[in-house]
Image 1 (cartoon, rainbow, N blue to C red):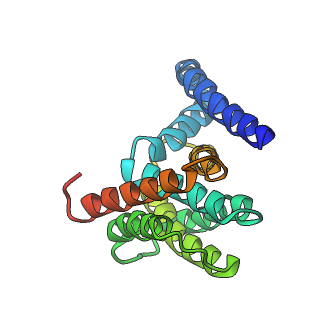
Image 2: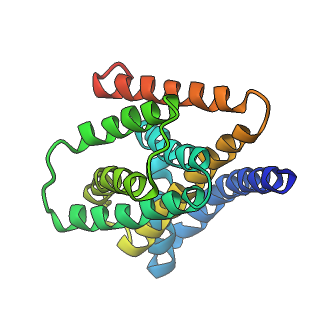
Amino acid sequence: MKSKVNLAGGALILLCCIGYALPALAHSGHGGGFGGEFGGGFISGFFHPIFGWDHVVAMVAVGLWGAFLGAPAIWILPVVFPMVMAFGGALGVLGVPIPAVETGIAASAVVLGVLIALAVRAPLWMAAIIVGAFAIFHGHAHGTELPSAANPIAYSIGFVIATGLLHLCGVAFGLLVGRPLGVAAVRTGGAAIAAAGVGFLFGFI
């Protein structure tokens, strides 16, 4: 358990370090050329999910539910989501329409939050399908909002990395399950995520 806590702490430190270093990268990218285009595209992609609270809540929920379910879901769900999200992003870039994208994003927080709050231990295949289905909505939103001047590859790499780090934040919180009152804390977190999802769904947040 101590090694897991150390791993989670390391992941959070890494997230903070990257968040501190990225503004310098954005500043150095103003020189133009491919390097500037790549840096600008990466920065835009990285901060797009982080500055969208509906994305943040849902992505943290994926890691949290994975940690609650335990191995192998603790790493499979955070892998499935970015992979399927990249597919959804490609659909958005290509202009393939998907109805009710914003509703799907808000619903992802509601559903995942409720699953965590109710301590639902779904089979791995079912959990992967649920997470993958919602990932398409999140990816499509990223793809359609791709800045025209950004490098699409760099932008995609940026938002996939940011997504993975948000999953790690959820996993880190989910590791509380193995500590006293940890399950109650995780389930309370799930309830808060669901409540936030309802706020997004009805425009309260």
